[in-house]
Length: 172
Image (tube, rainbow, N blue to C red; front, side):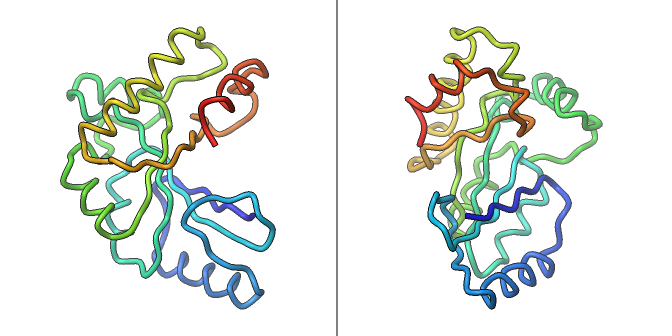
């Protein structure tokens, strides 16, 4: 499985081009990340408003969503600082945007509630982050999320070995 991982900067034409090239190489597209050989996937993290452009695609993608921006503006500003973005960064924080993406065929997975550094988080706090992420998914209308977690910051150095063991018990 090849997974192409994006944040906010992408071009629909580039995504379509990558899709066609990989399809021409004999790979099959799966909007659900898989462990099988011969597939590829596109995924996106961190709630950027640019995701709304993905509604124009002919194929679905996987989006890993933080849910703290759905609480209030003050918490959204803290979230943006955590992901090293200016407070003017436009992110999705409304049910309508999420519903549009669901209606467009896209899937959602978990990314923690507030984009924490998991390696610096106690077990009880990590459990709370995941519970809040699940709770807000339900509140904003994501009733059938993928049972997958994308580690915030996306690197092994941001998660400890014992945490991986615990997370594998809860996620696919």
